[in-house]
Image (tube, rainbow, N blue to C red; front, side, top):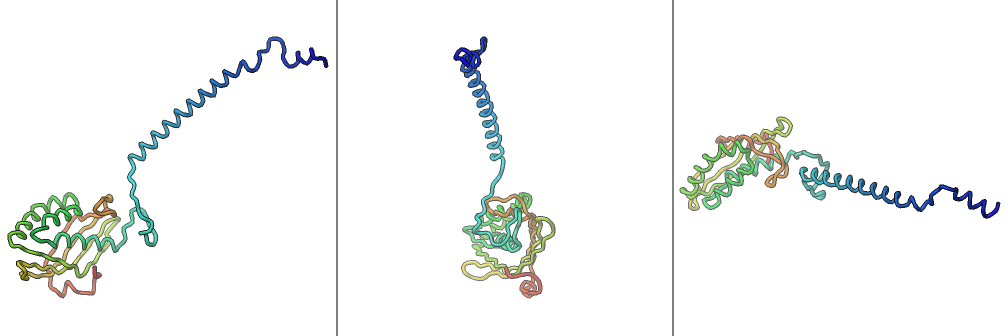
Length: 216
């Protein structure tokens, strides 16, 4: 085949050189890249908005013993929570009565806190006027799960009152608490709160009866 024939095969008359289409390919690729970038930005914005709406709770893996389940409340923690509530509410001095009651408010439901407000304000006046130092020590507790995230707690405790260094009152009490699970919060990472609370005086034998309940 001659050189003239070779040239006629590689480029026929009327054909355009291939490099003339290079600009069209570049523009097409650029349009595709722009579209992909727009899709990526939209996806990132959407994910960021979802993260902003989500609530994350950090749990230190080193603190977990045994199996961990979302929303799970260990049985012993309900006992601790109820004991902590009673002690906070019933261990006061003229100096810290207001602070103690405010801490107890943080463990109550909003409905119970509203009901207890007037009662506790009266208690603060009594403590300050009588210069009372009140201590409450749980001696026995019994917790029963009554439903999903619901617990009935009975706690027995020894309550003693001192004024100017002298014992002026001592009694044993039985506390009834309705504890429910709600959203976790700073004061309680498990999200428990007291929805109802009442107590009555009992004799010492009833308080220390070992037939039911556990030592707190």
